[in-house]
Image 1 (cartoon, rainbow, N blue to C red):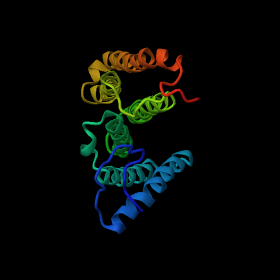
Image 2: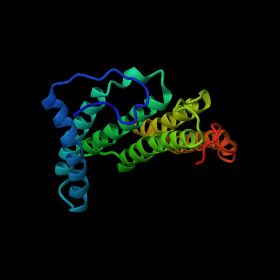
Image 3: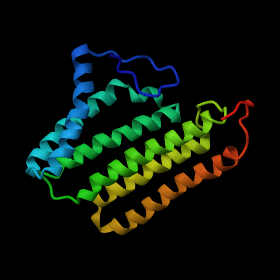
Length: 204
């Protein structure tokens, strides 16, 4: 099975990896992710949840490296996918770290929600808006700036409280402002576009 990155609408050289390694990263990523979720629901000891999260983080990180994300740095509509996926790895790593270090659990949660879900959502909104209006699947400078703002928002929300807890409130405010600004740029760019017909004259 190919280790190609999902939704790669532009040509990226396929990564090479031993088949067994590629299969391991593909098969065990969802297993350990869902195992961690069910372990939490079942109320298993924190050390068990942390161990599962740690293994899952390694599996997801290995898979991300197989996609060679550095090959997409000049293509914002692709690098945002990899950057957002990386926050899943960080989320799982923080969940594992919580077993050894006393940290607010919300840091891991925000890595997942702001970074992974937020970034992927903004990218898919861009793809859908462009694709359904007949435009090429290439992010403009404004869209790339919005992607960057989301990354800054999650980095501020996760790492400032982690490293400089005395600035927690400021980090929350700044992160929220960056997040809002990112989606505000999307609305400003695509609101007038979505109110008009497709540029190619086709329906839908």
